[in-house]
Image 1 (spheres, rainbow, N blue to C red):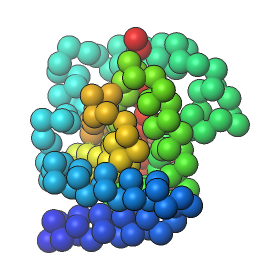
Image 2: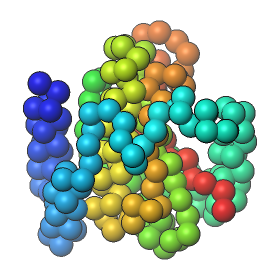
Image 3: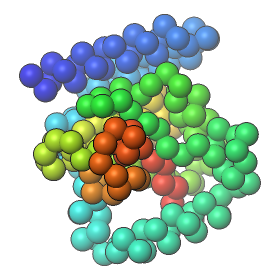
Length: 198
């Protein structure tokens, strides 16, 4: 059942992305990249290309060290990351309830990050998947991973080498909003771009 839901989500997102692209060449690149990634990525549970937030913390980094790295990372990046008029300043992709499909509004944001990564081949980014508190812990870890991998697939389809990308899922463990209810849950269903300090 989960595989069928995932396959349906993938097909729908591919159709939407292909139909909505303004340049046929980009649409072909995106579609072929997504088809290639479908064969290599597994989204039911964690694989060797992704880890859970708990695993990241047990690999030697404390949560305060992760936050410090994130702050240092933003300050070491170019001024375009702090310019609200620049799409690179948007480092959060939001999702609908129980979905890992990237919404159309966020395609240009992902494209801007793809261009940046292509222009800066030494730069790495962690795609951090998050969920709201609804669902079991295990389900939310898997859903957070699926969300991060949806962004990952769009970046690699635009030419970003997978060596520049890492996927991590925190599930419901690191909410952006502590409240309970739809207003908070909307903020928690997300993928964040966490650029690494060089």
